[in-house]
Length: 327
Image (cartoon, rainbow, N blue to C red; front, side, top):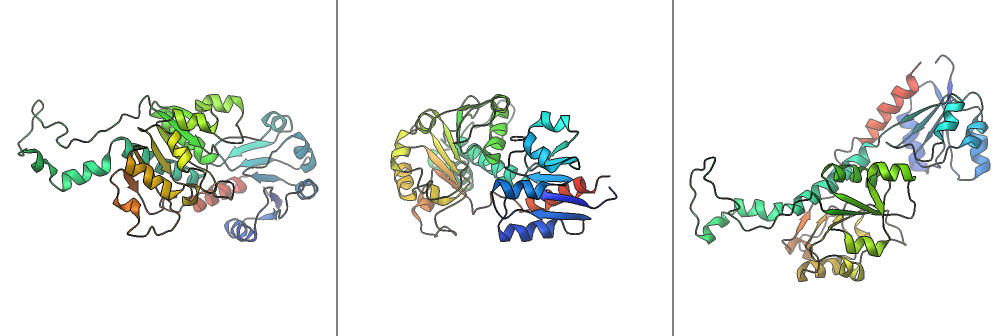
């Protein structure tokens, strides 16, 4: 494109994220417009004459497309899914729609799936049993194996097969949807709870079924949390919620520690009220070395590494640069 493009990020941004946006899109021949307020009037004024709209959560409908005008060429949705984008209205106006998958969300979903598999296969106790030579307490002696001669499960752990099990996802945003994709690939039934339900066709394509909170807690074999930590979600999972879970169920948390009542969780894990937990986040970080969670065998703990290598921002920047540099 030879003319200088007007690019409008239509989600309101904080001062911190304004700085990030300007750093990430620096060097491009564009006029970058960033909204600091959520009002409709400010939005309509900002998009007028735009060439590109960028959004993570904002609805892009026919009215907004018309407010942008004939100059609009592209809408970039920061998601693998075009939720909230009126694709037919875009097509009618010859506006291209591109999706930019969020690597940071994908890595968190991968971490949650890792927890699920480690809990299901009892990997911590399995690993420690091999390292510690626990076979000796069972009177076993190492022997050379062959195709038909081997010591199956020489440590009495109790693995579970994820296939056919039910995963309940609390919080069905970008991360929750990415986790659903991975769980379905493992042959799991996926339930979810969220105050915002995706379009029916997307819900069907993800193979996910909506449940109210009580039903999800009662029906799921694994429950994974993907919600923001706000006053409304403080200790969302407490003693009452843990009691509703199956005694064979596992709780997974890769969002924020404060959404779980840790004291209640420790009690549930100690008493066998639930089978186990996989936790990447905690009320206090680093997790104090003498915290009761560190003394339990039925937990998998990690030091808040669900976001992966931290390359999500750079990946998004590179994708946006490529899309905004196209002729």
